Image (cartoon, rainbow, N blue to C red; front, side, top):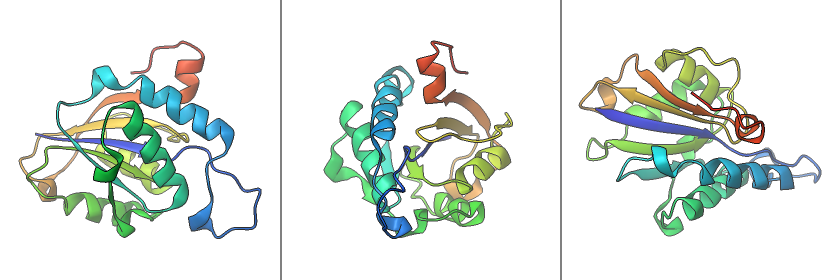
Length: 167
């Protein structure tokens, strides 16, 4: 059994004239990342690894989550291949994960994330929002063999703000 928790980076700023890769989080993004990550502890596996896109907004989101779920920030693995908006590249990267790990938390970008969770999950999601989390489970013994999985949990900041229960 393989488990993937996929997180779209938090809301980023377009205010400064920066390269896309260098855009930081805005205040709302920081608040939403703290809100969502602080509500995840009951749904985390006992052991996991964290992979993140090296883009500033994704790496900052990963660091906020890591701090709130008591994961050492120095253990975050930054993968250049996760700086993608293409679900095929995201799928290729996920399939390359070592089978030594059954549980991975991954921080990345849209459209890749929404398209990936719709291809591999069993619940259609129109748009994975910024700071949105989708947890998928695959009945597979290796990452390279993942197929259609099961969507276990969806957490969006608006659900927590409105006190609605996510899936």
